[in-house]
Length: 154
Image (spheres, rainbow, N blue to C red):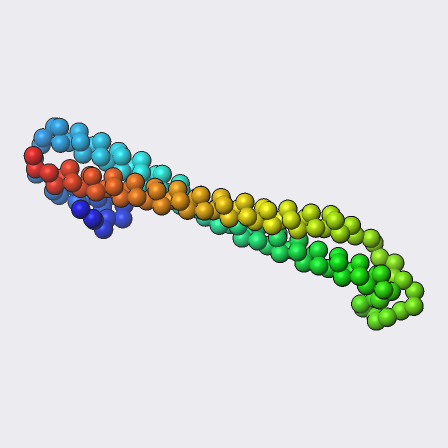
């Protein structure tokens, strides 16, 4: 039985309205089902929080990756303009422009690291979304079990 109850309070109001008798076994079943529902609701809440944290990490890693890539391209251009004696700000000059040498190998490593960190953050996000989906299904099953017990008249 599918319900549209979004939280435990709504579900429990429905259960209490459907509970006309004082069967102790049924009350125990209802309590156990309500505890199961609360646990599932807590798990879902934590999973949704984890998804938000993972989304933030992906966005941050994406920015870092872009920054590393831009820094790498700038370093390559600086190196190229230094080699041909060109100063991008004032045009061609006869003397070599004295610039701080940038190790392009280190720049490439930084870009690769940022890309790897971005991919790792995406994987963490994917896992968090899967856990959130599982928690949501578990919560829905617990809620449906709670309603089914409440509807069962014996």
